[in-house]
Image (tube, rainbow, N blue to C red; front, side, top):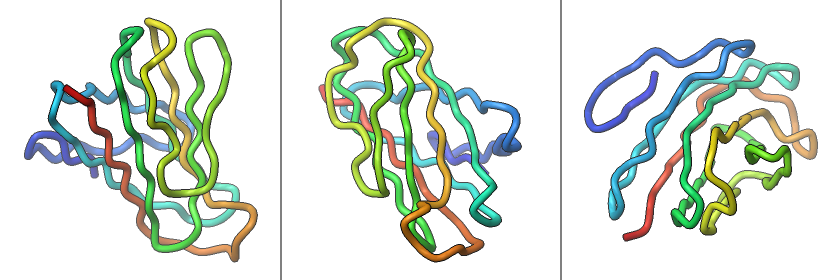
Length: 119
């Protein structure tokens, strides 16, 4: 389920990106979901404006990986924790993919994404 400003929204299946609306500056949203093994992943997308300072942190019941794809196709990401903490370099649609880290043991369980925008 997605929790955004107190609302519970269903999360997307692995083959459909769930749209996320970035929070207002100084605010934070949380998105929760589940992974069911190494081959499972969840995809999200959001519109971002160049210069907006965004922080995305991913945690899970086991090792997770997050990857952000910019509108140009460039990518940023890595193992769980802070996967993005910077001013967005481009205006457009960003993609966020969450999966289990191939560097850890396979697991089934929950993950949480926290997204904040700096003032």
